[in-house]
Image (cartoon, rainbow, N blue to C red; front, side, top):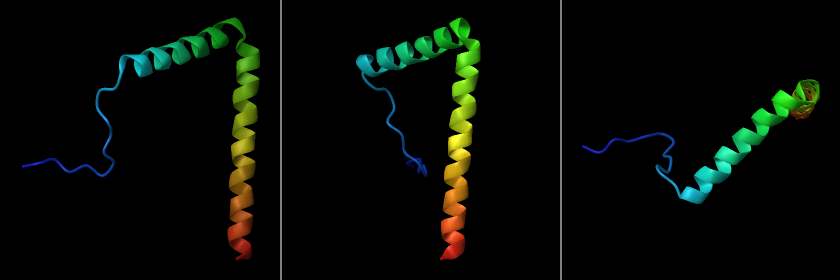
Length: 64
């Protein structure tokens, strides 16, 4: 019997996509190790931006 999944994902993938993903992870780790305060500030700013987007959507939906 076939297994049904709610969110089917593509298993496997090409070598190029794995190499690019690995390079992105390594670059992020190097950034955190070399510049931890800058990385923390960027994460904090991204969190504030996401919070303001969520607040804006809640205000919009409240007015509808």
